[in-house]
Image (cartoon, rainbow, N blue to C red; front, side, top):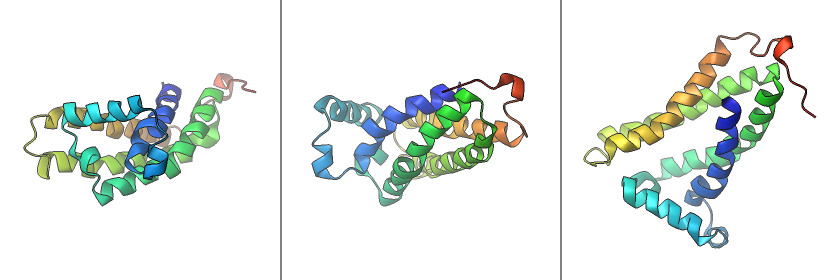
Length: 156
């Protein structure tokens, strides 16, 4: 399950989330369908964070692109191959990713998004990025050896 989480996030980060931080000349290289998809999300879900790009949100997206994106490749391999060395990095990822979502959820409930009729939907969408990373961190924190020797898979 964790492998799927990390693999799915690679294209999502590169093709969608990065649109919040790409300079205009790089944004112009993206297919119009991807830009339209993001605009559809903004309009349908009234996502003011992606629409307005407050500086703190942009900082979190930069963290996702610069720190989490490379980690997604490493984590996908490590989980697939059953590598125990991923334990501490996975805890760090899970805590970092979950922590970045807390201000977003707070904004939906107490900030600019508090009066949005889509508040609960946005919290459900963003909440998955709190819950799953937190579960990853907790499962690794309570597993001294997450991949016992008999479960290790051979990956070239």
